[in-house]
Amino acid sequence: MRKALKLVLFFICSVIVAAALLVTVFVKITPADNGSESQIIGNIIWHSAPDGGVGFRILKEDHPEYRIKIMMNSPDIVYYEGALLIKSFT
Image (cartoon, rainbow, N blue to C red; front, top):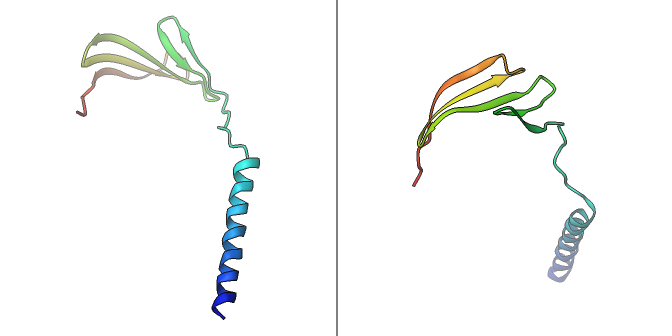
């Protein structure tokens, strides 16, 4: 009885390992292409998107304090303009 149980468990483990190997060898995982492309327009980093995109600009830098501007849909629509403080986590 024990020998039969060991044989069944060995068979189940073999099937699981074989399935994992097949998935690893034949399934290609690639990131989804959402069509977003980054480009520099003037002094703005712009990330295109179906809804218009998002732009980012550094207005003033005095590390660790920065003044930034974030635009949405077009460079004319300001989402946020203000201070950004970068803190060290060490």
